[in-house]
Structures are given as C-alpha cells and as structure tokens.
Amino acid sequence: MSASSNFKYDGTDLYVMNMTQTGTSYIVFYNNITGRFSYNLSTAGTVSSITAGDGLSGGTINTIGTISLGTPFDITEMTSGTIFSDGHDHKIKILNGITGSILYKSILSGLTTSSNLIFDGNNLYIPNMESSINTYCIYYDNTNGKLTYNTYTEGTVTNISAGSGMSFSDITNTGVINLGVPSTVNSYSDNTVNGSTHSHKFTPYGDNGEIQFNSGGTLFSSTGLTYDGFDLYVSGMTSNVTNNVIYYNDITGQFTYGIKPSGGGATLPTGSTSFNTETKIIDSYLNTNYRFAVYNYVIYSGETNSRAGTITLVNNQLTESRITESSTTDIGDTSSVLFNVINDGTNVNLSITSTTDGWICEWIRITK
Image (cartoon, rainbow, N blue to C red):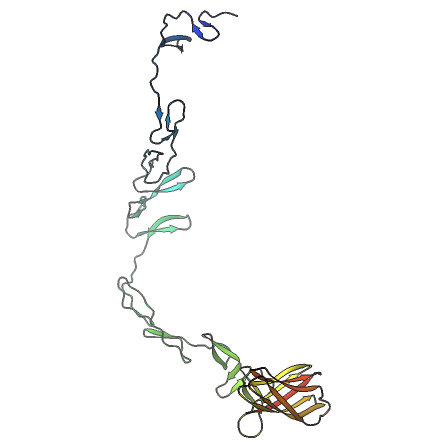
C-alpha cells in the first residue's frame, strides 16, 4: 500500500496538498486533460428562486422542487402551436401533398394525403385524369373499390308532356311529374286510364254471391248469406224442407230458419232444436216486448217416442213468469222431457230438460 502525497484527510475534511491559493472562492475539480484533480477560481451562483412559467406546472421553487410540462391540449386542424398558462398545443403540418390534397387515415403512416383527390373549398377534383374532355364523368368502380372516370352520353330528351292519367305542364328544363286525381271506384269500375285520371276494377272479397258488409271500415263478405240476383240464401242450413222460413232472432241478433206455419197472415217465429241429456234454451224474447207467449210444439225421439202440445207462458217486465202445458198422450214414452221458463229481468227464456239422449223439439210461437 502506497500513500498519496496529493491528498490529506483529517477524519472530517479532504485536502489537496501543495495548493498555493487559500481563497474561499476556489474549488477543486477533475481535469479530464491531465487526468488529475486540480483547483481554480469559481463564481458562486446567484439564483435563489424558480417559478413555473406558461405551459409548465410546479409553482415557485425556493429550495428543492420539480418543474413539469403542463398537460398538452388536443390538436385539431385549427391549432397553431400556442403556449397557454396551463398547457400547449401543436400546429399540424402536412409534409407532403399539394394544396387541397384530401387527407385520409393510413394504418402504416397515420394521416396521409391523397394524390388522386383534391378539394379547393368548392369542388372535388381528380388531378391525374388523363383526359380533359368535358364528356367524362366520375363514377365508382365496384370491381376495384375506387373512383374513376369515363365517357358519358348526354341526354337527348328536350321535352316531357303529361300522358294519360297524368296531370302536369310540359317540362323543358326542370319540373314535377304528378299523377292525375283518381276517379271514384264503384261496382262497375274497370282498370282504365283516361285523360288526366284513372280508375280501378273493384273485386269484392269472398266467393261468388256472398253478401258484403262493413267491418270497422273494412269491407268483408258474409259466408252465412249469399244472393244470386233473385233469391237470398242462408249457408249451412241443415234442412232443405221447402216450408222452412228465415227469421230474425232478437236474442242472438242473428238470422235463423224454421218451419213456416200454415195459413195466411204474418210469419210466426219457429224453431227446431236437437238436445240430449241436458238443459237447453230453445227460445228467448225480451220481457219488455211481450206479456205472454203461446208455443205449439212437438217433441220426438226417432219414430217410437213423441208428444205434441201447447205451452202458455205469461211474464211481466220484472223477473216473474209462469207456464202451463197441455199435451197429447205419449206415443212411447216422453216423460224424461220437461219444459221450464226463467225471466232473468231482461229475457224470457223457454228451456227444455231431458234425462235421455236423441231428442228434437219443433215449435211455433205466438206472442203479443
């Protein structure tokens, strides 16, 4: 181990030996030319405080602190490279392209200018078009997904006039084409065009002969009633007996049919009801319409059991009603069939009850 003749350490401070200057303004430094420590005159610093200026943050530092760059602002096409009190922005400079070049996003190079499209603030141009002939037009080529150009043929139409069914003045430059006012459609209308109007053929809904009716503003056909120009028919009738008549049932609000009574005068309500082991209403009327009713009836089950008779019924307009029955003696046995009446306060309901199956009741009603 060798001792240095240039440095001395007293346990507290390090000294450079053989220094000829003792002034306090001298400092020791490393001389990278000679590769040795030396000393020279120094000037002490005078900065005592630093404050963060525009674009910086950190406040005022008197001893120790940090000065940071302020948060940058968004860059837009209008920013100009400005320093603000709490941040800064940048000006966008396009490094290539010509004036008016269209900018587009490129995955590889970011914002890039197009060499094929320019915009002067009013018009869009394709600068590398090889022809300046004014009959060329720009179009989209769906085979390569690019805009291109080619020749086009100018129109030869010089005048447009209103034809049949149309209504507008001759157009030689610009104008509006209008459809003429449609004519009223009726059952005799056909598909025609005439003058400045037109018509349509009306085809009714449903099958031939079906009655049409209004259903909530829509025209529908009835599958229950048909008309052949002479006679009205009720579809689905199970009887083709010639003395059956159609009449209106004021309880169900529907047309039905039954046996026409013999003799002249007004047509009387009739009915034909089949029933089994059940209680079934065979006729009803409003208790405010009539005070009494007389029913002539026959009940039968095949050819072995039958009886005929008359039911006399009286009622008021409240809830009371009574019946009496007079009848023939039975052919076979009809004791399982009974009549009853209920006045529910609105309707007088004549019902029939049976404890066996396979019965039919036919009746004629006289009311007053």
